[in-house]
Length: 210
Ligand code: SF4
Image (cartoon, rainbow, N blue to C red; front, side, top):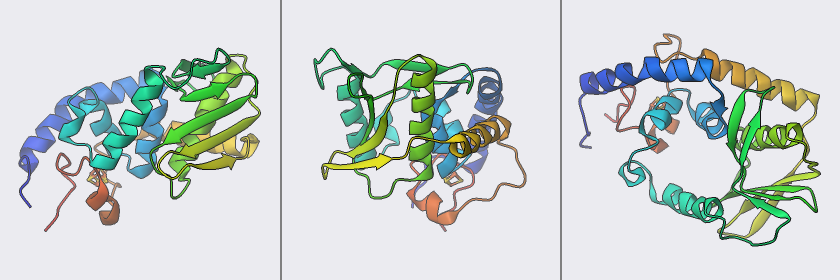
């Protein structure tokens, strides 16, 4: 397979951005969507931050682009005009040190919904994301009774338990690991099965498709 750049070029790009991103991760609030990246692969969080503002079609596969379009509808607040339904609002938790957005929150019913294009498994990264959203909303003074995922393509709903103390400790532990991870971490080794599916593999110096 033809690669977009040499390993030395990839390393240069990464090193140029890594220190800046590390500073951002350490000193500023974490972005909730980065938690899912981190669970998939800690290195991918750097690519997400490095390339997050660039043309998404350059590195997103089709299903991910579809997912983004689904979310765009939410972000542009086209999904519903019901006043009790909050859509795409900014959320924040001082306690967790995270910021982000929710998809949908029905204030009347207390139902928080995170939409994904297609859900086959409720991955840990998904759970940690929605737990973060939950704790943000609670801290912001909302009452959340139900948290759930909605799989758009097959119209399936996955309701998950409200996080307990145990889940909160898990989330805090992962957030701490995100803050501590360093791109130069010598103990890191990649999972080749994930690398093959990784949308950033053409940018990553760890990827080898030989
Ligand atoms: S290519 Fe592999 S090591 Fe690199 S970011 Fe993706 S999953 Fe991680």
